[in-house]
Image (cartoon, rainbow, N blue to C red; front, side, top):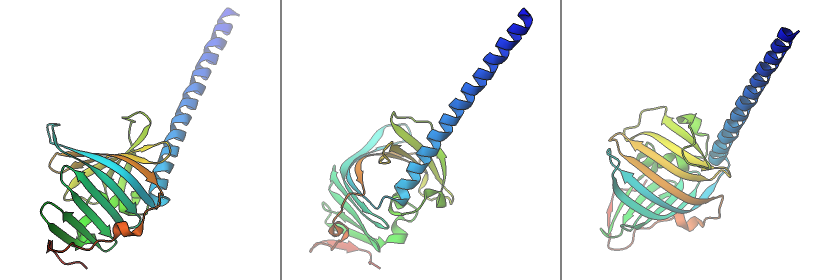
Length: 220
């Protein structure tokens, strides 16, 4: 009887452990599914972004070689305005057709058709209103910062400029951090404090070169 009782208890413990394991696995899968849904919703249901950012560029040895900060305005599809306030004032404006880069210190404007200017750059992913799976191989990462869900995005087609992008979203579906790795071994980290679907004046995406500045390129 004792042997039977021991076997019964053992079976019960094993069954309990299996149920706990299954429950834990199910909770992980559910959390990953919820995170993936938030990622897809960010790209398919968010029409605009507005807020601030700070940016650091690291060399191959992990040393900070550049810092910048400013404001961001974005309206999907195809429009954005990055305003670099520090260290050097510069604005990058996409009006849906062209990308304008205005360097105030140099009194110079560079303009290119939008497709040629940003198609293969990381910023392109933010301007599209479509699931990222169409352009990238998306994989869920271990959460490397508390409160954020992390995803690694590797382009289906090789880019001449960057290898992959990592995105960190909070539980409310806001993009809080972008990490970009380029072909030269450098890493760019952009920390964002933005509001999804914030009202953005359409004038933010209009640009006319100021008088007495050099204009390089021809708009489409």
